[in-house]
Image 1 (cartoon, helix red, strand yellow):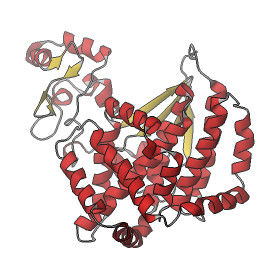
Image 2 (cartoon, one colour):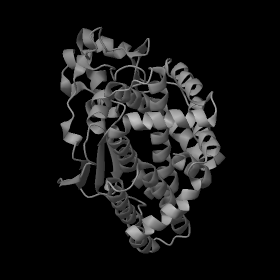
Image 3 (tube, rainbow, N blue to C red):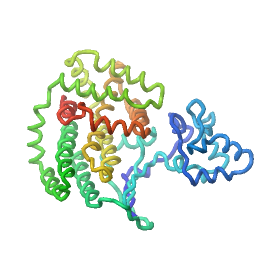
Image 4 (tube, rainbow, N blue to C red):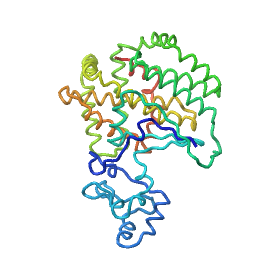
Length: 383
């Protein structure tokens, strides 16, 4: 079996009680069946505690004040301390490592919701190479798996990473390029013209296509009213999601009030000022875009919906950029990496670590007019 992961994947090391925001609070921790059986057999006083602090029907740890019942006052795990590392459930043992499963392939990543993982991902000076390791495992045969489509998605993703790595292209044009080409390829997928993807990738890969597309994109530039409205409408949908942390909604509301309460000209002026102030750190946004494309794009092999996956990646980066801009403004035009890191992992926790929110985001992108091709191009290319 092939295991694929970005080169920074093995850099992660948990800092336990030194973590600024423990992963053992704020969400339910689900327990795998194998661990539940081990906990059920555990004897003694700690076995009694396990029996009383697990929701056996749901298969999750109880929480007290939104903290795992086994998280002590020093933010250390009592299961680890009392029973040993081998008694950690699969969720706790893996996190923040994330697995996407394909036939005879596992794609591994670090989750942005972990402060340490977010730090690693954001600090990459170049987009990471993907590494493949072969491991001896029994061969899998899925009942249905479109390996041809998966292969084409891999080729397309590699092309996208080449575009993101090209330093001669501006960030917003890179995002527009991903959106436009995914929109184009989705029409081929819908028609089951999978072999046409090879021709499209060849067409997109030349500088000539990029130059021509920039001419088309130019009509969406400098439309401040439309661009501001497009970004605001996308941002407002964050208020429709399930809230994991009680501080999240007031924080979003403060950001919204600071971003969109003035005229479009003022909004653009603040955006240009922030961009000039934080431009040396644009690589962080490229790293984020790489992350979201890497983690989610190939999932299109299961639902044939590449276009939604790419829009999801772009929208997440746009939202983080908007929050960054708001925090910079709220902080008297002060913004640093520590602020960025906190924004990113908090955003990821709210959006990525709720199955309800992921499904809701997918539905919003599929059906909402604010995620249409034209509206998103306005949002991306306004500045």
